[in-house]
Length: 229
Length: 305
Image (cartoon, rainbow over the protein chains, first blue to last red):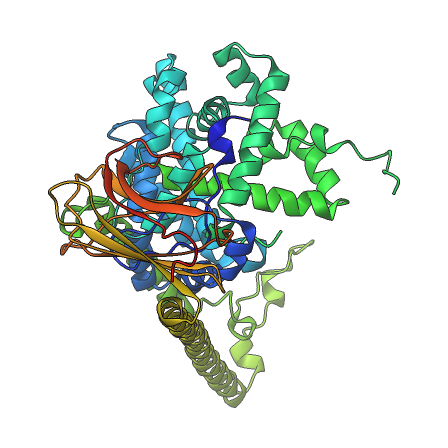
C-alpha cells in the first residue's frame, strides 16, 4: 500500500477561523457531525418544496445558493465554452419543472441537482461532438492534466467551502492511478471500456481501480451526505 | 450462509458504472431488475450516486455577480411568467374543467331527422326553466371558482407552514450543536487532564501557538496567533509528531489578524507525542509535510501538564 494511503487523520476537525479543515473523516465522525449535512439539506428541501409550488422567489434563492457550483461543474466539463450559460439555465429550468417529482426518500437535493448538472453538461458535449464530428478538446485531455483537475478546487471561503475542501482532500489521498480513472469517468463521461482504451489498460484493471476508488471516496465523503448505508 | 445462485456476483453488477450513468440501456434494465430483488445492492447504488455527485465539488466554483447574470434574469422571467399563467388558469377554470358547465358535444346522428321534426326548445320549455338553469350554472361557476381559490390558499399555507417547520428545526439543530461545541471547547482547555504544549517560531517571525490535549476525551484544541498571511493557493497544516509518524491534524488558514483555532479528536497514547508543528503547504493539501515549518513545539517528557 502506498505511503499516502496509510495517513491517519483525526476526526471532527473544525477550525473556528479561516477556512475549514479538509481532511477526510471516518464514518463515525460523519455520524457525529451528520447534523451539518442535515441542516444544509433541510434548507434545500424547503426551497424545492416552494419551487414545486411554483414560487419564483424560491427558485431565485435556490439559484443563488447553487449557481456557482453548477456553473463550475459545467465549465469543467464543457471547457470555457460560451454555451455554459445555456446549460446552467437548462439545469435550473429542469429543477423548476421537475421539483414536484423530487422525493426526499430517494436521496438528497444536492445529489439530485448535481446529477442533473453533470448529465446536461455531458449531453451538451456529446451534442457538440456530433455536430462537429470531431473529438472535443475537453475529452481529449491526457492523464497528465488529471492531477491539476484533482486539486484545482482550492480552499475558498464561499458556500460549500467545506464540501469542496473535503472532496479535494479525498481525491488527493487516492492513488494517482485510481484518481485518473475516477476523473475521466466523471468529468469526461467515459465508460470503463473507453477509459481502458484511453489509458491502454485491461478493462478488468479499470473496473478494479474504479471500485477501489469509489469505495474510498464513499468512506471519505460520508460526512457530506450523512451516509448511513 | 448460502448465496442465491440466481443472483450475479457483486463484481458483475457494475454499480459504479450505473452510478456514473455509463450503462447501456440493456445493462441498465438488467440492473434495475436485479435491484428490485436486492435491497443491499439498491442501497449501495444510492450511496455510490452520492459519492459520484460529490465529485462536482472538486470543480472550481464559477460565481457570477447577480447584477450581470443574464441567466438568472432569463430564468426568473420564465418562471414568473409560468407561475402567473398557472395562477390565471387556476382562478378561471375553463368550461371543460367544470362538468356542471361543460358543453356536451352533439351526439352522433345515424339518420338525419327531417327539419320539420325539429321543434324549437323555446316553444316546448317554459321560460322559467331556462332561467333556473342559467342561475344554477352561474351558481356552479361561482362555487367552483371559490373552491379553487380556497384550495390554492390552503396549499400555500401548508407549504409555508411546512417550510417554517423545517427552518425552525434546522435552527434548533444548529443552536444545539453550537452549544455542544462551545461546552466541548471549554472542557478541552480547562479539564483536569489537559496537557499543554507551547509552540514558538523558528524564525524571526512572531507567530506562536498553543495545543491543548485533553487526554481524557482525546480532544485537541490548537490556538495560534500572529500567523503570517498566505497566498490564496496556500494553507497551514497542523501535525502531531510521534516517534514513528507525522499525523495530519488539520488544515486551516488564519483570520485577518493571524489567529486560528483548530479542534480535532484523535486517540493517541499518552507517551507517544513527541512534538506539534505547523507547516505551510499547498491549499490542496499534502498527506505528509513538505513545506516550511512555521511553528513547532516539543512535548515535555513525562506528564506534559
